[in-house]
Image (cartoon, rainbow, N blue to C red; front, side, top):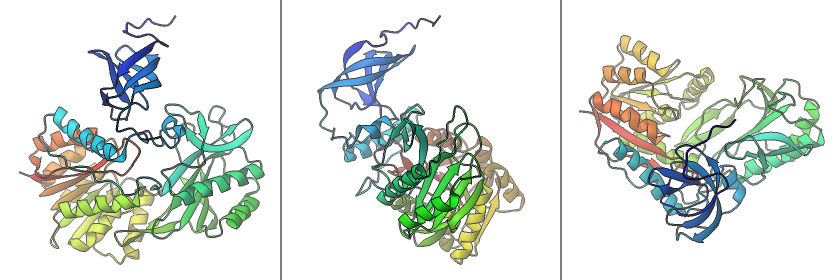
Length: 458
């Protein structure tokens, strides 16, 4: 028997409500009473809307927008409702200048809630806030006995077939449709995550915005691809300028996107691209920022705010393939990079040689452990640069930073929540933010925001 929830609303109840705010995920917020919020997709602050309650929890409920009674002046026409349903572009209905304000507010509010007195500058946006992604990882599923590509409905694994993804480079969208049709032609099965059967799990495409080189990776549930040569020939015929066609084997159960083993079907096992005049070799498992236009702004900011000199020693933790390290190297005495992904470090070393940079050292390891080893070796960084994953910095890493006592720590963040959590620890350890935090819109049409903060030793 289901447990009765004591809430002021019931499932399927229809209500007329006023939207007060947006959540960090971009959902509209209305209050049923002082303590009970409703979260509504596709609703904007200031709007009066009719909603239907879908899911009731003890402290909040999710509702569906049925009708807009009073429309916000910030609302723009949505391009395609599937972009909201799938989470590809959940803010597509909000005017772009207001998206930028929302992101600045998101960062500022997080500092304010945690009683940190920090100024946050207006978000740096894009002239063209669409067709910006240089990488796609598109799920493949069988729908009505036909192989389909698209994107999952939010909070589910129900595939919505989509051909034009709006925020991706159009050449990527074209390539996905071509590959999909060729896989259909050869009766290749799509992966079924329930039975762990079928072959194609997803199609990954990488595209160099400067080089125009393209890589396609078929992520498969089994090494054996039926009709592999015919499929390769067909793809190369339709995409004659394709630089790399590969297979990635992922036999795991669950949501892991890629496996560890890659095989070349045609061409190279990498593509080339450039950031801030530095060349990068990018392999299937490399981390490489997906919005190159904004990444150049982001990294240029990090370099400027670090106030680098030719006498400085820099540590780049979470360095990936060396994108920040190698951009900083010409301005400093030496840069040390560490990353836990072995392939990323191999790429970073290759990229250093490629750009004839000899004052960069890259090692494989956990940042927090490597910091201790460097400290034992007598390495004293003037500047530490971090670009951590969404979970932020490990506490033991922060302890190592405080022991090393760099003059500055430059923090490139993709999650305001963990940025502020880490900021409190750094503040307690004697560091402060003296210049405004700078948000950068790396992901237009979505609620995600990156930012650059500089912590200086008191």
